[in-house]
Length: 132
Length: 291
Image (cartoon, rainbow over all chains, first blue to last red; front, side, top):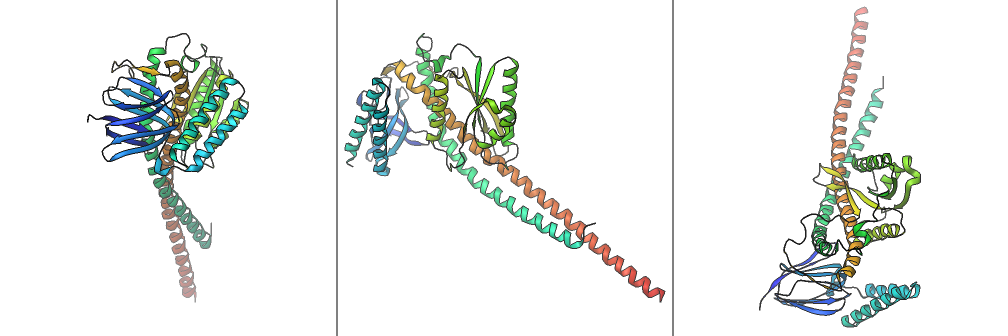
């Protein structure tokens, strides 16, 4: 199977760099899979699971906020926060959900309330996906 | 003329000081290693971010509806200077070099009749600036309790700056910090944050036409504030590395200086001691001759 270059970076470190066959990215407007030779594309991310398909089985990483860029050189994901599923702390997601609920309560107008609601839904989906 | 006992006490005190500076130098060296590793780990993200931003800005940049964080407010009457310094001293000229650069900029802006405001990150810079510009400092951020700088700290500062910008408090924002070149060279640097500076030639070189999801404006609106946080994060990490570099050099100098002092003091001590012995001998001999 054709492979392409993939990089996952968070502000604090470079989490993954190497050749992969497929990456599933949680895009803001829907999840999508990226294969080699994908058209140039830039998409924002929602909190969710990013799955890397490479030699040695799939690897799952929780990402929160950020941007995916597919260029001729390959796929680059700039995540605001990225934590491998094995290292994730359930309390952290619970905290994020609580913060989000507070945001809904404090929202000043409909637009920001809708935004916070959508975020809450995404976080709950993520929580369910992780099985906590 | 100090007595021999006084001199012994002085030598012991200098030796104790030397032990402390030596220990501080070693601590700084080990922390420096961690700090440079952190600064290097943050570099790929900032570089990729710059590239993506340049790509998008190239396609949106000239639209009239482009975000103000990118285009600016159209005036440059009031400036915000964000001065990032360390929380501690004993690091040679590290803090004062950053403050001096910021002060020079502030004075030259003031001479052009522009308004200047300060936002201080780090206690030392605040202490030095408040003597002269007390009423111009609008915010201070204290990172004293922070052991390891995380992205959240930088994001917090970024949000503060953006809130001030949205409130119309300033038109141009410049960040002052110290770039880490090597252990002996830390370069105080000024970097413009708002309006965003897109490095020439960074984008569009591959000629790819990107599809955007959601559209360019939305991505840009999300990307620009994040870019500011990233720049601040990078500056803080560079600053931490520079701080330990400067501290290591300063403490190395102090240790060497203490060594010199001990040598000089011991020499004087021994000379005085011998002079006293000689004097006593002369007294005894001349006494014996007189008998």
